[in-house]
Image (cartoon, rainbow, N blue to C red; front, side):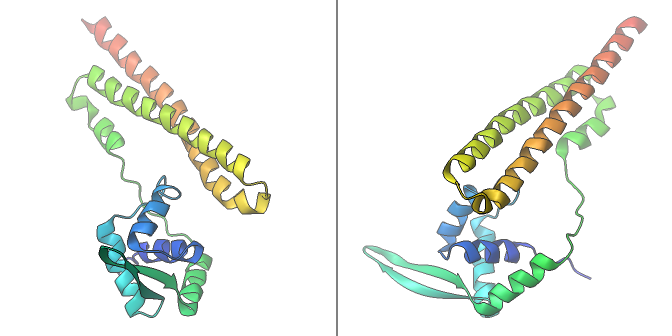
Length: 189
């Protein structure tokens, strides 16, 4: 059975929040879901066309002065129903693709200092992401006085915070292990 394209549901979800053009969808995604789900323009526009062809969305042209028409997409009632059907399905487990882990798995083919540098860079990236997520969390708490309004967005931000904290712990543990390997190599010499 072929894997179902989840991009369609990401776009239907975004259209359920705010109808818009492909450009609007991409910008909204960059400010909301891009930390865990992103789509390129090359994925967005063909998928919007497919949603319209399937009757799950409609588009209307808006005239723009001195520019081509802007097509605004809106989710239809069948689109709302299809989104809701998908939201109720169990989540499919997808294996993570992680270049750092792949490099570390084969790390014995390069020097330990090279592996240490990979982990240090990854650690720094997670320090920066943690700061970003904490700032987003503070911003959401500040602008969303209604707890129900912010609860779902905060859930996703808290996931990012917890993931960063866990990855920082893993980085520290891994750096310790790699340092032990350096010491073992030094003792052999």
